[in-house]
Length: 391
Ligand SMILES: Cc1ncc(COP(=O)(O)O)c(C=O)c1O
Image (cartoon, rainbow, N blue to C red; front, side):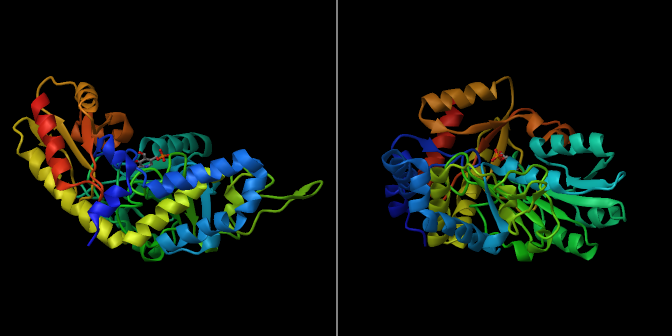
């Protein structure tokens, strides 16, 4: 059982806000804030380079912490400033033959899709959407039927930004493995709300962010690159950290995933990320998942009891993100603003964030809620009640 009282006592933000938007950026535990401040203070006292040197051992351990959290090895981890940068580093490094096909999911995130478009234009690729089944989940049989020798990449969002859908990441991994196709998984919304085991999933690359369900600081993320790629993959951009300049005409790529990193980084934020993942692991990601599921079910039930509210989540398996719309002329942005004035954090998601899915389902701007394990049942009730008062 999660000790909610203790967790809440360790979460300073709950005093100031009723925050039900972990899919945006969640409330950091005090330990995370302390780690960031402590390192920043050390930098102020002795200088940034000197602080890094003083804390080198602890800072290096962050790779072990991230690796353990997702079932990887430390040398397969690169620390990044967000999920998009992590994802892009992997994507732009992949070699494609002209005419290659990229297979992706209906609810793919805008940042990923525009990158597909750019490389499609530049490298003569095609982007093809794997259809979903009637529940809205990516259809693995359809995926398998689309495979041929021209498929150069399967890249999907495990959990999209616009709702509760959980795509079958592991089943997709089995197909990718069967046909030996590179598999890039966007785990941005999965990290911190459910267990991640890259070996079980069978992905080649996985990207995630720190600030959402992991409860880390903004400006953090990480990239997993499966070991087998490390001997071949060349980053699209390098500097002398990822690729030391060893002779006038020669650079040599680092042997680990850190070949994707650059020389300069925010060590204070990294310290915060390490603390956030340790905090989640100390609680237990299984327990976190259970509680997020429980609160999400309550949240959906309460919302569905409001007459004008329409739940928009799809899929057979659903996660802690809840998307809904309001019938009539109510402006969702105004609702979010009014909620904020009343001390509640809920959010919006625009159709452009997941354009293919939004067009298919004719989605308007949606409202989003995402309870995390530190929320109480009373908070969810209070938040939904407040929404109902605004309608
Ligand atoms: C599914 C998904 N992928 C990627 C991202 C991008 O993450 P970041 O803002 O950390 O780059 C988001 C952000 O909301 C997301 O929801």
